[in-house]
Image (cartoon, rainbow, N blue to C red; front, side, top):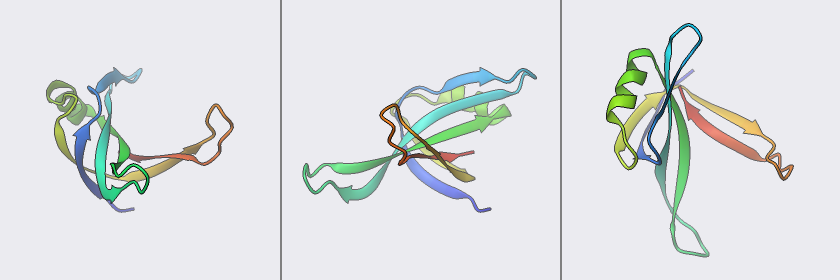
Length: 97
């Protein structure tokens, strides 16, 4: 497996939680500018990446990161697919762990 690095801005404040064993987990979403423009609107396209931090990194993320902060992330990518509430099966998200 390989690592992926991205630079983007936090879409909202991080969400901190803990496992039953007390392990810290911090989740947040990062907006990444793709460098492309939408053909119809002319607006820049944004790709959203979900990130999960664990243990001490989770504590630091929850303490220092806030909505709008520019962040550099590096981690193992995974793609999760699902069917949305309208039965569209082509939904997917990119996550860094």
